[in-house]
Length: 482
Image 1 (cartoon, rainbow, N blue to C red):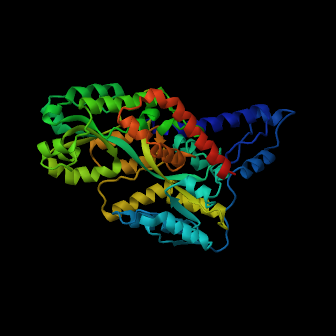
Image 2: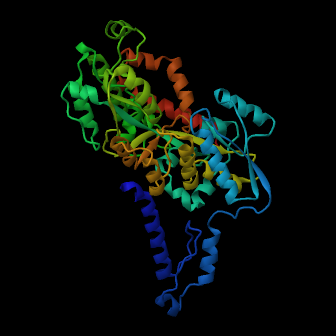
Image 3: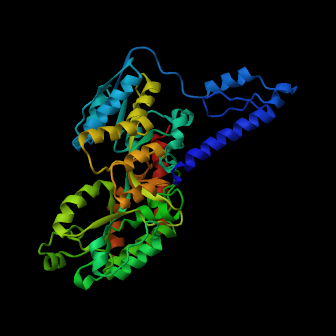
């Protein structure tokens, strides 16, 4: 399994730095809080031998500050509790944290999920924001001065090396971190095995590529029989991640937007496939003719051979769609592009800028979102609730955690999805400066409508969109980044 790649890289880097310290007598800082052993025969006899105690003391000072031993109370808020297993997962996490830190009491703050930002606004007005809370938009939290800059905590926490790199790199705002990933929902392909058998199409390998996906989609399409090769063509979301390492939707790479040839090709493919019937985009009259309902969703009736969706939809397909369509579905990893990356929707959380206990809030955030303990306790809660299909995935590259996730299913295809989540690129709507303002401008000027109506060619407007999106980014940073 490739899952340990980033972790091993970090360990090797730390080992190399230790070796350099031993050989050269350098006292240059590292990010590890553990002591550095440089007691070699050479340094023990050399005139330039380093002061072991000084190095050890310096190394200890480079990690996170000590947690307080005072009795304190922290507050916490997250959403999703109406879903099966989420209350049990939350309770497991909070209980474990308070057992690890018995001097800290955590109080849960209830916020109406349907009016989440309104609830946060009300709490902020009274100076009572939770110490740690999830947000739909990190950029909105920064603009409202709700979010603490946690860059130093991240860079000095040795456990943070396990977080998927792009989830951090793409979430930097003006070079700083305000939000940390909590859970992710990877994209995957809902492969209709029944349709594959109907048209004698061999099942692809789990290591399939974008090119193979394209060939299959065109080959298995039969629009005259109302069967489509694929559906939900969000290619402008995940093509950048799959073709350009580190990029997300709109080519965002953590610093700027790029409406480049990848974006142009993604839109052209979408439009070509819709026009030729490869991609399901059926008009109401065809839905009425073939399915008896002009409002029907063709993938739900088994009419799409390969439907792109997210892990939160697996339970719906296993239950409602399978029963309605009579089809058998397999769940495949996203077909790989040159980068080898996979795309995921990622939720983020922040620490309140007004917290009186930032170090302890950082630890609470870790134990309720991205940390190893957070993940293991989440899945213990799921087991207690009898959850069979897991949709919320870890945001860390930790073999022990992923083994637990894989233990929820004996399905080879779903386990293959997990095994391919080695390099994961996040969605950006929550973290990219200027993203919302740019989308508002696109809608106000009917750019999307003109593209969809084929009034504008993607290649003709790509450069303008790159310039405009980065102008909104720069304007946002000028107004809100500190």
